[in-house]
Length: 278
Ligand SMILES: [Zn+2]
Image (cartoon, rainbow, N blue to C red; front, side, top):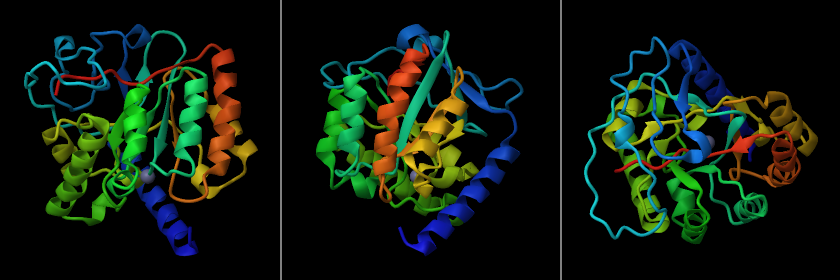
């Protein structure tokens, strides 16, 4: 990563933090025990989001294969803030990996997750996904959840609606082709959300997902530092942000090998959101 890119990311990160701060109370995604059926995605208390989705709007679906006809569910409510946490029974956490897939790092992350039988979320960029479709197929095979992280990782707050739509739509198209289903989650690059992104996300049947703990792994702070941020931040409901692309992510790969077994030893259940009917 060049110095310019780093500075842009830093500025964008700050912008994102402000945007999140202004959004008010953090929303939590409610998960059923063991990712079971009938979870409810409820807005945070006091949130202005529309009616919560009915539990009946959810059920587990096989990750591959669409033999049965799909029933169109009611359109998603437009949210005013992203989910920042998950809430489930006991020590539930979620791991998320952004900006990939990258053939240099993503396979190692998938290997470590598989070794421990853990599923995670991958917020992929279209321009990475289109060249690494086999990695999306592997994510599908291994039960991971793929979300939309735009095509080129721009600051959405500096784009018009048509540009944002194109960034999101093209990415959902390539995910559908390689992963086998359109994404049901999206994450704004740099956490910089705006009204158009929430509206377009809902229109495309995607819920907004942010994070609780940022490992800051993209600054390559050292493997120990990444491990420390995860372990210090570990708590029920925490969503961890890491990266499997966008630069040298070997520290992120090594850190996962260390903190994942430690989280499991500490009794954490690592989960992903269940799939909704599209
Ligand atoms: Zn990103």
